[in-house]
Length: 440
Image (cartoon, rainbow, N blue to C red):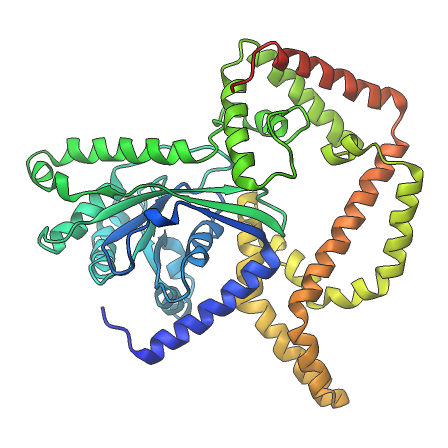
């Protein structure tokens, strides 16, 4: 698959713009572990990962790699039927359709062979392809079941090249400090690749057993690198992990260290002899905090009326600047969420993609035209648009201060009986957790 220099330049510039917006507005800190395990660009390999945060998963992989890498990804096939122009755009940025039996049925599965040919063309031309074997995203920090489809596709690619080159599958894992806020931390962990060349002969004799064995190995490697809390009682367990009751880590430590501590806490909790009692108390505690409009950082800080008053004064002083900064960031933050129907895991995907691809360019042109044509402020309008990235970060910092101040007021207005009830529940859970020794 040959690419002209002009196409390469357009792709690199557009990818650079998307990465700039992503890394400035959406991401606070990016961590990448094990990048030395990734094969050299030009080798034949798949990048395989757990799938949690919808479109942010392939974006995080793409933006963690050098800018000149042309990375492809399999995406749900239904998005390719939105509009012919969108279809051409998706192919141009490297998306390829994946048909799933649970959505497109048996007829769609037949079309996957056409996608397999496209994948083989990209891989055998030296472009890596991102695949999510769960065939759909999960709703949190846990790993779903893998089908053999990913390994089957990898052998299809090898066969298309006559089994001459080694096709590799690279297990990787994502971890997010938060799925729904912006300015959060992300981690991408790259594991050692699985080389398929040693299996070529066995695959031609016993393809199904070889594919099942490699799929199990792939699942185990990804599971070991990520936070897998398990789907059972997920909300209560995730609440405990992010609470002060998780004494194995601190919130101010780097995300890779927090991940290691959270993995230990998840094992401790899932294997605890008083698991059911802990889950029941955690559910009650979570409901109590939500009813009072409180969060864990506020409960830890025990804010005073002086601190709340200082927050209110600062908010009032900065209010005019915040109002100015809301154009266009306030619209870009809230408008995409109006399109969400039920799956909250799409929150940041909608927020980022619609903003970066459509809303920011549209509002940029609109700002230049209105300020330039109406008032003749062309240079001022251009400067304002160029300052959108720092003003966007300010707008978010102000919103976070507003949220912290609101929680502080909720805390100060809560009755002593309610706060004592929270402390009693925390103490009971802590007693249970401390009855089982922590892992060293």
